Length: 369
Image (cartoon, rainbow, N blue to C red; front, side, top):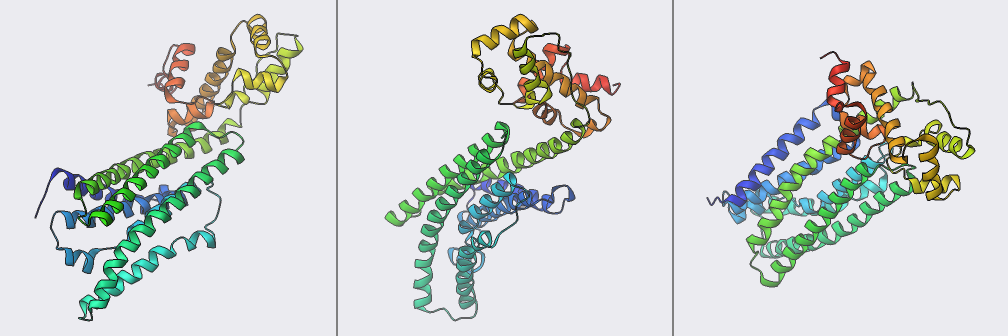
């Protein structure tokens, strides 16, 4: 056997991913399509790393690897990631027949490798089958690379469609998914470079593959932690909306200026303060006023700035949510995002500014702790 820091990290990532996947698969809390495909993706990455760990550490021989263990996961992983993105963004959509067709390449290559294993196990191996399978390995790797690049295009199209269709797409929901997809694209290009080097030199440079496998181990951790974390936040936000609709913030209109009345109607009555992307530019455009004029008007009539006015409303919204008896089960970051803030730090800073307490301190005070 041959162990080193790299294949040990591969093994640790694989074990973590396998354990995580089975916990999520059997948890009643995470029974959604997006989480199912996320868990399947992490399991796919983990099993792929595990099989290459066995080969790299010389726990099994090259012949045993292909004759017993090898599964062509490369044509499966990006399909699972695509379906995760699809159902994360559009949870009510169904798995279409076209979606199911994306699994055909994996089952085709898996069937061919299974044929090889059977021929080897029952003494039916011929020189022709052996030569065909050696070529098939390279064909599979090249096809998997091109297939993954095609699926990445579909993934970014799904994200673009979501931004186009969704009325108020949350940056916190989209940005991390974009970044994860960019990371996936970089890993795919690294995978392509490994294949190119392998085909050119024929030496299967292990150092390059170490980088690829370690990146996959990091992705296992990243997807497992962030994917479930984001899922929890989204579920909390859905439930928060149910209780938020019960009470609405109102403010007395002390001003008689028609532009200020229109401003307050747009911000408060229509609850646009809950939009994390709300800006003075957007409001002035909606009201047909210049940005500088509206800013001066808010300062003179309401004795505050645009940012302070909006953040004050958001804090009042957050306080209403926290004061609700059912809010105990919600995370503070979900409350802050649903109140209109775009990050946890922005929520904490504004809450401290207006109440003198952090959100967690305020929540404890409300609960009598």
